Image (cartoon, rainbow, N blue to C red; front, side, top):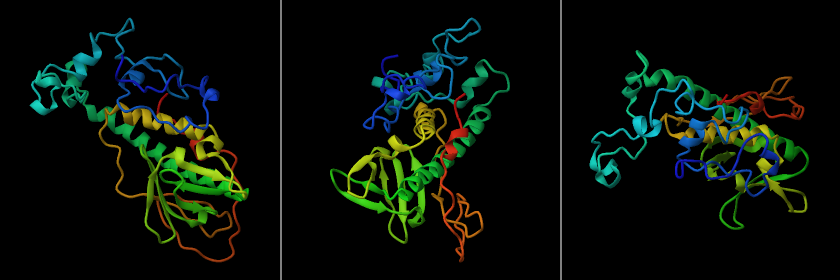
Length: 278
């Protein structure tokens, strides 16, 4: 399909090493239905393992998959019709269309589990981003949250400065101390600089590969746009729990006490074990 794809070239485990600092943080172009349907341009999956609705398998019984389900020839409101011809060009399939082929199968039965996995993955991405920042700041580097051009919106020299962080397809929104939220900042603009103010690359470039791969998968499923429920009401919060292990707990703010030392540096972000596709 010409239009509804990621438009970022081949993205899979084999091609990942060819990415550069300038494109590793790129997300898929919105409307990536073809990639999801055909099992292409995703990480942690077998390339070409197509979905049951791909209309290219011996067991497929759906003719003209995209048109039959997602551009169903029904009369939607005129402003949602391509050239007001009565064809649903928004690609939003009606939730009851599944029962055309699947008896007693509602869209919510599919969307519910995937939405839950997306939420888990997003939480893991947020944890992994902070963990990667922690690794870099412990080396003596600084995290710069960049705006347009050379504008620095905020700097992080220790992850204890982070009050909250929220990841989305637009980037991250970070609150430092009692300040106002910063962002959304694209991950391509979250830079790591050394003590001489020399940029070492963006955060994804220096992270465990599982982080940018997991983030791509998350954005791929969101860009497919078949769920329409990937928002969260509040950002995920981080703090250093004052306990012997000094573990970081997501999604809640914990009180601080005395006598806690910095935890050991992690070598692999938490994102590694979480996969939405596969």
